[in-house]
Length: 322
Image (cartoon, rainbow, N blue to C red):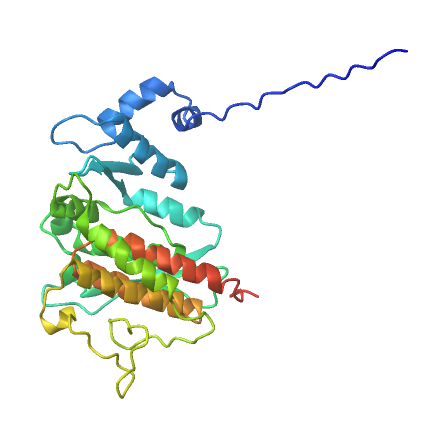
């Protein structure tokens, strides 16, 4: 009697390359040399050194959007809390827009000329292959123009870039990346907070309950005519205008962190309950404009996430070319 002995070979799975090795292989460079080079070229530093953690944070974003840090499609500002603010140059924005599989063209519309001969606003219009209606975003010269050299010498071009970037965020839900103007404002406005950012904590605490108790997706939501969201459960006044909240910034009051968090929660809940992609897009455009008026760029990411969830729930939609 013979015994049959079976043996099982254990095959080790190949280990996935590190992010650093993956990006280095993409550009055929040595990983260590690439890390040292990018620390010197991909960050705008006034003083100090770039940490490995900051460099890794930038490379994660670069890999997500397949942006080339060597050609400055993406670079970063170190923030005051040892993090980074990823900055995408206009060439980088143009590339990720053009490479999106649903991109179907972009147009620009100039507004009337002001007393200085410059357009009062420029509107970007992006078409998607899977949407019946175009996405529009209008940026105003008086809100965007800064005292920097590019704005002094090429104000029309700079405003066109602003309109393109904001429209792309709405059309494709690009999050976590900024243009240079926005990045500078974020860093300048930051307060060193070694134990965490109280504003963001207040936003998270306020937004989560609103998302958990948002109205059913089957409840239709009408986009309000004003630039303020309709609070969930609030009754509209005659003419469809929402009832003004006690802490409404338009009333001349300055809301504190909790009030801002509550307002963001209203926007998020309204987008979550939207009955069409167009309604969600319109709400997000108005919410983004409201966030910029209050000077807190971090709110954009929260609003973009709520918009992305709403669009994902409402898809698929009828194709424009069907």
